[in-house]
Length: 325
Ligand code: NDP
Image (tube, rainbow, N blue to C red; front, side, top):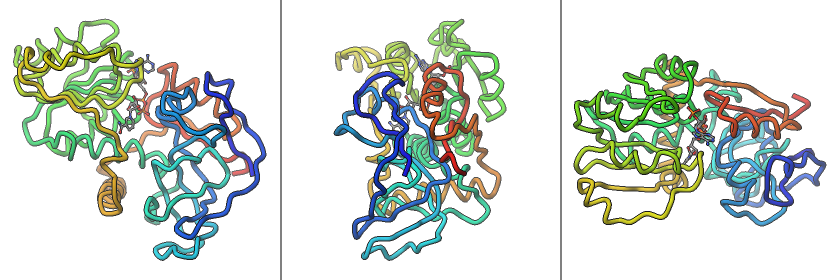
């Protein structure tokens, strides 16, 4: 089968589209014939070696397709089922092997592209708004990269929970998309000082929570945007790693809370995973959650997909699809 593998960590040149021997599922695994593959920022961290994997490896943490073979102990799925998954390595391929407990059935009315576009970023937006800092009516949030994959979904979930959303974005086009998704205020953070803007918008009160996936360029100012006892949810580093941090700053700036969560700890068991994924599919079915697919590239062009995500040009989701589909 065809797959995109990484043999050395590095820039997009290390992505190799090549023939590899097809894989067989173990007893608790299923083999999925992939139709759509999600591209996520974590794939860039894996490619660069920031999150280390044993070389060589097939990139990719998200996909959707049809069950093609099952292991002896698989009980919930049959060959032919339409499924999706996130947080299992190896999706940049025609087929992937996935542990049964990470698979979810995709409802009939949702196609595999939408399913692949909603699992990883959708479950992330879900745990951030419902578990890491459970939003309630009247909360005010600051969300960076509001027109990104996670961003557009998080805005919609925050509005469902009746929170007020201040979003940051880099361009007017992204501002429009974030507004359409429901953001109450938008800050063009490349042009304006977002800390000052947040103070203006909140009458110097600050926000209850900052969801910060940008990291290096936003982290310090994000802390300054919080109310007393507010929480910084630092969940990514799209701009680079966060500098070393002195915890006493948390008391100086108002007895703040800081958390650095990851999806694998918030979809840690079957029950939690199904709750989040089924919520998302049900909202999509009821048209309460819109999935924006930015672009779909052939699997052989994974390099272009990474370049687009890294260049900040994408809005919403980038997908790959196997070349023969
Ligand atoms: P996005 O679609 O949000 O793309 C990243 C966005 O970050 C860009 O579009 C850009 O928006 C912004 N950005 C700011 N500075 C930079 C920079 N120097 N280089 C690139 N982008 C920059 O990606 P995802 O939705 O896939 O992921 C968003 C973040 O969430 C990532 O940091 C990812 O690691 C994190 N994440 C964390 C998870 C967790 O559980 N902890 C799970 C899933 C994702 P703009 O142009 O508007 O500034």
